[in-house]
Image (cartoon, rainbow, N blue to C red; front, side, top):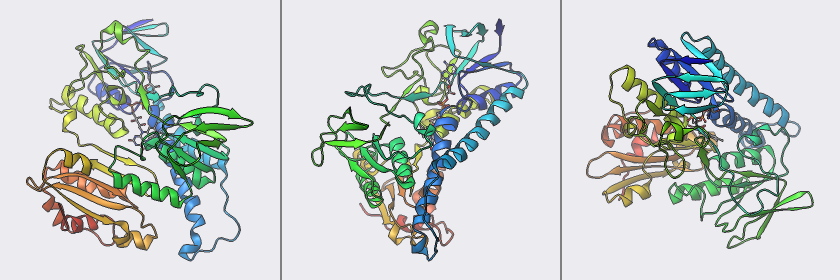
Length: 457
Ligand SMILES: Cc1cc2nc3c(=O)[nH]c(=O)nc-3n(C[C@H](O)[C@H](O)[C@H](O)COP(=O)(O)OP(=O)(O)OC[C@H]3O[C@@H](n4cnc5c(N)ncnc54)[C@H](O)[C@@H]3O)c2cc1C
C-alpha cells in the first residue's frame, strides 16, 4: 500500500515513541516504523537488562560479605544463572510490551513493523508499503562494532546482545574493551562466579575519565579478583582445544589469556548504513553519524535525527532530551538546543560512578583557574556505615566565575548524589549556593557542601 502521513518516525528507541505520542497528541497522523524490538537498545540489550544483572550480581556479592555485617547465612551461596536470566527477561519484556501496546493503541498512530529505507526525502519504504510525509524523524540508534582484530572470525565471540542470552556461567570470561559497557559486564560475571580478565588496548581503564577514576576502578576490580591487562598492543584470537586464546602482548604479564568466552565491547556504530540516506540526500560524517545542527535538523529540510544516530549523545537521557528539544521547538514555540545540555552519565559498576561536566584534566587544559575539592569515601560516614567505602568524590570549580565545571563521584550512591551538582550547574548558580545548602545526615550528598569548603588549586 502507499499512504501519506503528517510525520514518519523511524525507530522505536528512546526518543521515537515519546515523539510519536506528542505529535499524535498535537493532532498529527504519524507512521511509527520499527524493524525489531520496541524500546530499542536501552530496553532490550542495554540499560535495562544490564542493570537487572548488576542488581543480581550485587546481591550475590553482598551475600558473600554477610558475615562482615554480622549476618550468618547457613549453607553456601550459589548463583542460578537461569533464574537470573528469567528475572532479567521478565523486566525487559514488561517494558518492551508496554511500549508496543501503548503505540499500538495510540490514536492517529499507525505502527509498521519492518526495516525502513528512504526512497526520496519525503518517501520511506517498509516492505511493500510506501509511506510519505513532509516531516521525517530518525531514531535508528546504533549497534556493537565487530572489531577487525586478527582471528576474530575464527573464534566464537559475544557482544552486548548475545551475552544477555547466556543462562550458563562462563568459566573464564575475557572482556575485550575496558570502557563503560565492558566494565559493567566484567564485574557482573565476576560476582556471578566466573574468572574474568579485562583486556584494554590503552594504558588504563575508561581513558576518557581522570586518571584517579581509572586507578580507583582498577583497585575495586583487583579487590574482587578481576584481572586487568592494559596496554594490550596487539589483540588477536585463536582456538586451542576447547579454549579461546586471546593474544595481548602487554608490556608485562603473560602474553596470552586463555578463556572460555570472549565479550567484545570496543564501541558502537550508528544504524545508518542501510537506511537509504543517500536517496534522501541526508549527510553523514566519516563515522556514519547523521549530521545535525543545534536543533537536530539534518541538512535536508523536514528531516531530523534523534538519539545515538546523530552522534551528539550516547545515552538514553540524551536521546530522550533530543525528543524534548524537537517537541519543544516544533510544538511549543520554544528555542531549545543540544548545546544547552550538560554532559552527565553513570558507569554502573559497583560502587557506581556518577559523572557530570568536565573532568579535572579537561578543566585544567581549558586554561581556567580551577579549584578542586576531593574526599575519599572512607571519610564519608554513610559509606563507612554501609561498609562500602571504596572510591572518592571530586568537584571542580572555576575560581574566577565560581561556576561548577564538573564532578565525579565514584562511590556508593554516586550515581544519585551527583545530581545535586548537576542541578546546581543547570541552575547556573555559583558553587557557594550548593556549599551553603544544608543536606540530610547521614547521606553521601551531605559531604558535597563540605568538599566545596575544602577547595584547593
Ligand atoms: C550494554 C549497554 C548498556 C547501556 N547502559 C546504559 C545506561 O545505563 N544508561 C544510559 O543512559 N545509556 C545506556 N546505554 C546506551 C543506551 O542504550 C543508548 O544510548 C540508547 O538506547 C539510545 O537510544 P536511541 O533511541 O538513540 O536508539 P536505540 O535505543 O538503539 O533504538 C533504535 C531503534 O531503531 C530501530 N531501527 C534501526 N534502524 C531501523 C530501520 N532502518 N527501520 C526501522 N527501525 C530501525 C532499532 O531496531 C531500534 O529499536 C547502554 C548501551 C549498551 C549497549
